[in-house]
Image (tube, rainbow, N blue to C red):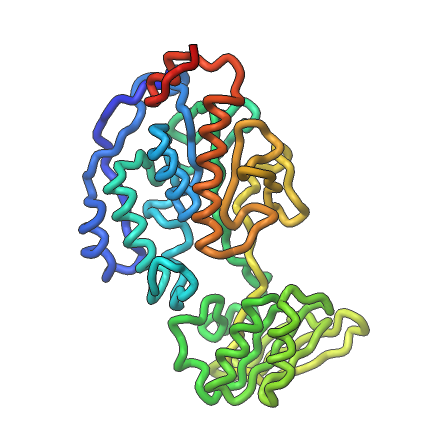
Length: 365
């Protein structure tokens, strides 16, 4: 039986950017209470645990609220929004509005979470789990649930550590949104063969002296129309089958050295800025060996964001098939919530009638 008992939890939510603190306090004050379980955690069985408080996780909780199903969101960071605060550039592809950057979306997300009274615990890092048993363990306690929604997000892939590269860290950029002036009349090298690398090249070539795109292989994830646009621009050059070796310069980056992956030949390319667009890694290592994934660590999902483990659902940037867009992550949350409700009240055998009633649902008699 699910037992929801109110206790005060001092929220430690903070934005990385101090300028956001006043805005953030308007939507979720430090010291606000959230509903948590107290007592022996091993005696408390939750209906739903959501791992990750990004757009997918929050949307899932909102939709579960609509079905009168209480959920507990567990977030390892001290802020809600997942990777939103790391997006520096405008977000023009959400139908609900135009957003200058990810933090503006994050502010709205926090406000909605507060208004809806979502149950969230932050700064809680899950260090062990058993998806088949629906248990999650942090350093503080063990959580048990009937159903779990995984929305743990991603992290950007970084260049391999190298002393010759790291000394030019100020000239290496992973997210280029806040640095438009750094590219004016400069030679820029972009590493990557995906969509983001080509969008970056087509954007930066407007002010840069020259843009060079370097791909480690001859396989491309970028759509053909983007590659053609790049090829048609005389100030964009691209190379394939090259791997990064080193960078050099006196006070700042001046040249980057690459090695051919086919014949070992060395190629030096002038560059004052290096933009890295080599993809991202899903935060799914904790679930490895327990759930069906592809070779890159993305969780395979079926209808309703279902996974290979009954009662476990997944969404957002960690799943395949998928598409790394905010709108898709939000949709996954809603779709998963509907599937979770179906699992709890139709598919799950031998449900406790008291548990159904405690969640606001009537048991079939």
